Image 1 (tube, rainbow, N blue to C red):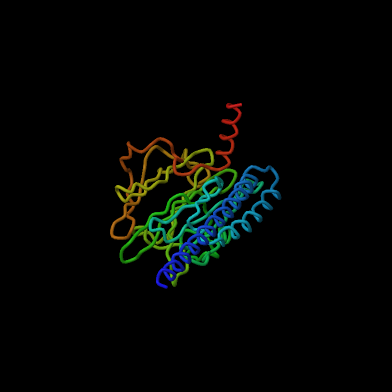
Image 2 (tube, one colour; image 1 turned 90 degrees about the horizontal axis):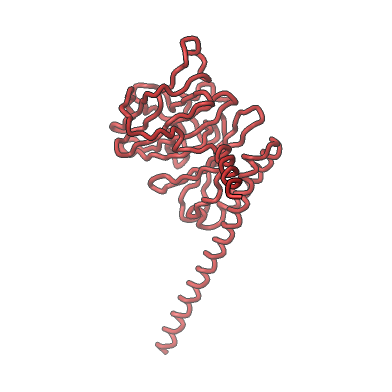
Length: 301
């Protein structure tokens, strides 16, 4: 009798393990299929010359992404074949941010995104709605995910202490003449995301926004060894252009924000001789990357 009970128990364990493995394998296959669809739609969003086609691809991209994220354990799937979209996890693995952009025919951009929490169970997703054109003072606005100052993020920095929050570094293509980058602050209030926080020295700004000519590249990166966000100092080419931010560009000097007791102290004229010359090494514009990929493919052929 005891042997029979042991046999039944072992059989149940093996059957359960097999069923679990089968489910995981099935989920992985579903996610791989969704990933292929997202990769194709992403290429259309970036490369198609027709704006309605780009917008339609984006609508399908959103629907496909939501379906994919509803698959159990989707948080663990990297979607690393979807090159046109930025997917980055927070350092504590509490959440990840998925963000991307669609360019309009006039050279402006609209940004899209979502925050996926690592629940270990049912999907908990916060859509990010780009509210940029309606924010009258974006530097000072504290908003939620429905009034997001849209950007495509490439770095998350976790700050712990009396105020725990995350700093996001992002690229924000702006117009046909100029580009923006942003230092954003993300926190969670009552388990819901909140954007913007006054943590930049004596400034009352809730986020830091840089604008510069589209012809230039700007360095904005985090140096973890020094708890330092370093960036190019932007300046006008001449006195007459000082009010024209679209003409600004790097002047070969560097400024930064140093993390001290949970706040970021502004420091100018940093000695950054060891910083690489590649200004946009933290972010590659997918449009430029697509052109490079096509060029490399042509060389191979």
